[in-house]
Amino acid sequence: MGDFYEILGVSREASPNEIRSAFRRLARLHHPDVSQSPDAAERFAEITAAYRVLSHPDLRTRYDRGETVEPAPPPPRESRRRRAARVRAYKIRIESIINDMLEAERREAEFRAEAVLFVVVGWLSTLAATAARPSVLFGANDGWVWLALWGVGIFSLWYLARRLWVMLEHYTYRQTLLSVTEPAVPTQPFSRSVVVAVLLAGYATALVAGYCLGAVVSAWEHRSFPAFGALHDGVLFPPIVLLLLSHLHRWEQALRRV
Image 1 (cartoon, rainbow, N blue to C red):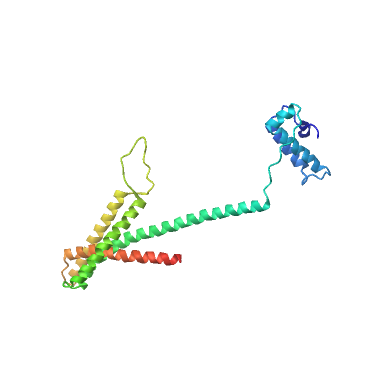
Image 2: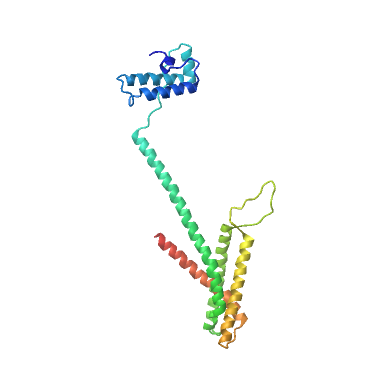
């Protein structure tokens, strides 16, 4: 095999970039898949061997000193089976990541739907219960009925408070004192105090609107409409309605996943 510098057509002071550029230019000319010359394979092997020596700093130094240097072996080629297995594993990983993202989006959509259900149905059921006063359907002497209703109502209030707390933790942040050295950047979209104020204002508005609606209808029918009774129903029945609708919503979501 001749002089490696002559094979690549560069000087002995050539830089690594010049050696790399010469190899690429010669490889495009003498590659067996491109060149029609009968000795293209032999010529390309010489060019490759020269580049492997001159592109390696230690081998080039030894070659310049006159030592006999063997070209660095080419990196082992990956078998077709291993390459297919690696591609398959990569596809499986990508599909797993996509499935996790879709699952997270599905859970977020379900949680958002439950939050909207609590807010909208809570306000509407408060207005309806205050205006319609469903307690008139039960007699004043039905002690066991009222005991059961208040038992369910207290449990519903406890359940409602737990779910509202989870939603507040998910969607709101607590306002803290600002720090110059470590400014706090909230990840949730809303302030907790603002959301709580909006919820209470909506609930109070629903109570007032329900009472006014019930009073207008009762006056038109020439009936009395006690404020305490309206307030009683506006507090007792909406949590029970929310408890029932929340469980129906969860059962419906569970059936969709089956």
